[in-house]
Amino acid sequence: MPELPEVETIARDLSKSLRHKIFSDVRIFDPFVLRQKSHDFIKRIKGKSFLAITRRGKALIIHLSSGEFLIVQLMMTGQLVFDGIKDQHTRVNFIFSDGTNLLYNDQRRFGQLRVVGNLGEVKHFALLGPEPLSDEFSVGYFREALSKTGRPIKNVLLDHTVVAGIGNIYACEILFRSRINPQKPACRISLNEANQIRQMIIKVLQEAIAYRGSSMRNYRDGKGQKGLFNERLSVYAREGMNCPRCQRPILRIVQSGRSTFYCGHCQK
DNA sequence: ATTCTGTCCTGTAGGC
DNA sequence: TGCCTACAGGACAGAA
Image 1: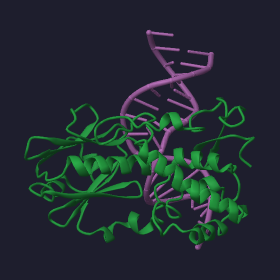
Image 2 (image 1 turned 60 degrees about the horizontal axis):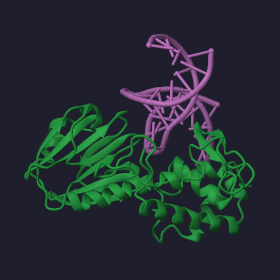
Image 3 (image 1 turned 180 degrees about the horizontal axis):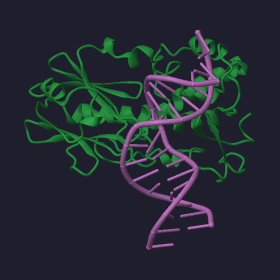
């Protein structure tokens, strides 16, 4: 699924594409992706206009003129494509008064869409840790969070209650660039290493946003295009290929049921 | 209390 | 070719 850089790219694209649009109709092809009854979902969107789109963690928040919010969790394979062509994975089609549309496509159907009256009622947001690109994600906060647990650092980066928006691709890339072994217990990471990891979190995410994200399989931006960060990935999905730093083969292990890619020589 | 495992679902790649 | 297994960007309930 899209992680923070991909979701941010979609939000930026759609904030331009959807400016001044009015939702004139909503077509539900697969009610499974809704967290509420279709008629309620449609009723709360139809006739409203688009005000803004923001991001929290990996979730998109569309602000409606009614004061309500359309929340989209893309999960693994969700896509929001402006003025695309419907295919077999199109689950919802939002139609605007000028004849353009916004497709919600989702191959695996893990994604979820819903309309809420206020963001405070969304439990997921209440549990989320700070945005990594905000001042809230301070040196002191991050050091403190690492010191409190003996879990492997990779798992801590994936824990959205610690820091929001980092997924499997960027957790691996951040640790590679920080030269930290993904299995290292968080509480054994030194203050200097914690600073290094924190800076790499910020740097890698900003760089990935600048390159419009990474496309492994299904990710597409708001214009239906692939991201460009793939060729800049050093370790993710590169098992057996050469480490760009020492030329030794990249390793793959499983942590908490998820693949981790790293260099056993460079990352201590 | 904290942490991990299995599950949700569809599709594809690779081994034999 | 075809069948079978493993795996895929996330989140969460329920179990250890």
